[in-house]
Image 1: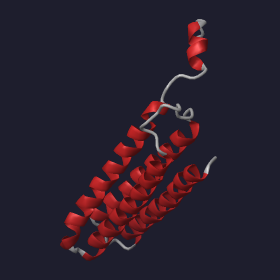
Image 2 (image 1 turned 45 degrees about the vertical axis):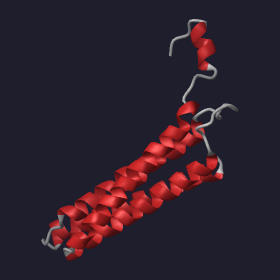
Image 3 (image 1 turned 135 degrees about the vertical axis):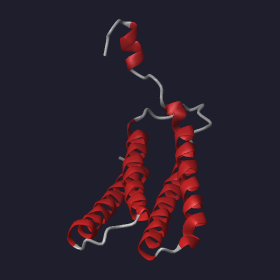
Image 4 (image 1 turned 90 degrees about the horizontal axis):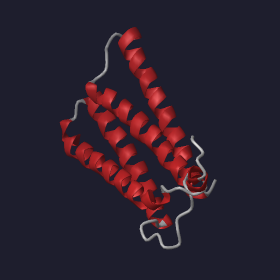
Amino acid sequence: MFTTVRYFVKTSIAFLVLGILTGLYMSYTKYIAKTGYSPELLSAHTHVILVGSVMMMIMGVALWFFPRPNKTDKKYNPDLILVTYWLMTLSTSLRFIFQTIKGLFWISDFDILISITSALQVIGMIVFFYSIWGRIRPVGSKIREARGEKF
């Protein structure tokens, strides 16, 4: 497993822990403190788990498991993949922070920042999958399928 893959996977785990702790806090506020939580906190919790943990794990594992890029692949660029890692990490972190602050302190000035960080998450995912598109190809399975093997 190379360095960029480890970045994606370990960051994914960190976001999962953050999401689980946020869920624990939400459970406490609802069932023990009886104060409840805001929809913003629910959204922050959901996005840090789904985008931060699940999507970044998918991205890391795809980067690790897919065949190496062809020598002629102009789309794949390891430096661009690293940029998408940082884009995803920073935008997901900032979105979580902005939504949490908005949810706890009812500050509406963060709406534009939440929208910007959401757009950056989308851009990061699109650029990542555009970059690895050429790596989604048959390698050994093409030969086995030609022999009639079914999977």
